[in-house]
Image (cartoon, rainbow, N blue to C red; front, side):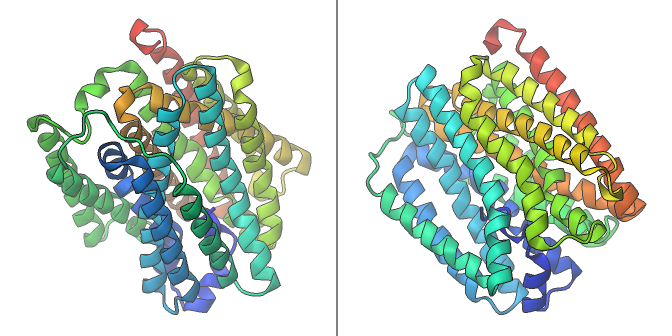
Length: 425
């Protein structure tokens, strides 16, 4: 909900904070920066120092950051709080799925539990714009963040009742890995965010260069130490490659483009924030319901991922012409099919995240998977913005949707092919 909260209220937030065009980009992408930079770190810490502990601390920090968002009077403070919301959400996502992976052994119960977890992501994506749109029309956009404060506080209280779990063999904190990966991903996301205002600017080039150097340093650190935060040998496992690659493709071709959908609806079809949130909920609502029922398919995780991406591609094709008053039934059908695919993907990725790593590193697996997802989503939004900026919102939207459809189709084919090796099973 926090991730999608500003999608329909960005004009109101910008007016209240006196935000310019670059600041608006950071309002949308600040939480993604915090998520991507800290997910893998949070997962590693949860496995070694306690998944419940990291989960509860994350919920508490999320509550505090939401208070700051609600009372912020300037763009810098609001964006900084959004970044902190991202780091707190990273702890919740990585440690939460780690707790589930530990509590439910492999089998039907784990498939059901991870499917429910994936469904909650879809529900949160659906509710975020609706809740903030409703409270903005009823009073002030700030009220939405006070609602998030209450939700985060409730999660703290519920989390305190959970049993603690951690890896049987804990590892020393990989300080070099934490620093190089965190700063490297922050530089990458910073470059992508700043690039929307001009890719040739010096600060963008410097950030990309810093990201490349820091991520290369992270790989070197992980190869050299005995107990790395991310065991690079995992990339020899076809299932781990499928899980992380599928998450990256999902962010690029599903979450990123769909995150821009309310903006298209408001600017081209002149819809209100609440109306655009309602249209958006066709996709996100279908994703929620499908993820809840995905376990009934009795499919392997990699095949379910392939099917979900294929449906997302088909739904995107049906959305071509969205910005030029496409007939409403075709638009609704496209959103519905894309939502069905997204639900299958969410459930499959949650399942693959814990199945593709050793049992004592489930939070790290969740962190790696969601890191790829949110890096992909940030790059996806950047690509959509770049295309629509160059070709115009109407024609650029069609180009972006077609590009996303092609990427999802290729991702589906790759996921299907990767599952043919015995090691992927």
